[in-house]
Length: 373
Ligand SMILES: Cc1ncc(COP(=O)(O)O)c(C=O)c1O
Image (tube, rainbow, N blue to C red; front, side):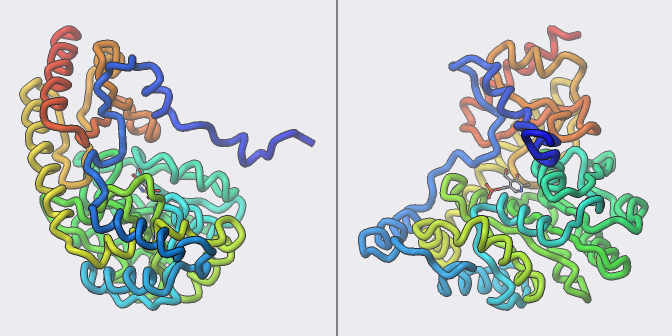
């Protein structure tokens, strides 16, 4: 017998944290995956009101308050033209828990889960925690995931594949045609498509579509969150949207691991989802300006940067030693291989920082690039 489970020994704390710790206190941090805007005032106020009225003291229903569940249902109708049943929704502690529920409820030990590499760090770790076998899929030159690559890697043991658009760490946005293909693959191969759409509103070029719109079976589970859209990462509020039978299985996991999402956060999320959406437009416009600045500057330095079309990350190809050189000079960026082996030779730059800081950081990157020549 070993002291710790094999599942937990198979994972470790994400490499991203180590990068923060390596940088000094005065460093400009472009390593963070969170917007640098405040949570909308009306969302904050809704939580304050609920707390003061004593409405947020008790457990809510496991899947969330009926009002929040309804807000999520209406959000999918409004933004995605999707008809999701209230029984298909579970409010979770962030998109992170939503991913965990989707994998726990659908993956048996030894079954494979396919996901983009480089990709968000949780896909690999949560697959291992579920006892599954992670399979990282290499990306196209533009850093999108080719549906053909997914199809080639499907075996008898594949339980699920993850699609993430707009993507962390690449900023890549999948085309509607790709999303249609992912849906076809989920239908035809009878494998689950977990569509991580937490950045769905942050799109500059192209458009966000969900594979769920195109699927003819219920083989798509959508993961959503308030975290990025409303700059609410600290509130911990996300959700899954699925068929009733899938949600019922995920609810079993949620009931025992979480009981319910934090009640004050549920009130804030309801207000964010149902309130004015112009705050989102403003944030997205700011991100787009910064994307343009970062892209222009990096290209001007001679770096090869697949054009990021969404989220708030750029992922240039960088020469050997570049990440270390940039960090040494006081700017935190994350080495691409923190997101999977195929991320090697890239760096993730988060531009969720104000323009002045970004300009300063870009100057440092230019100096580091020149020093390496
Ligand atoms: C692609 C992706 N999915 C899910 C999450 C989890 O988000 P949350 O903060 O809502 O748990 C993140 C957070 O960085 C992410 O980048």
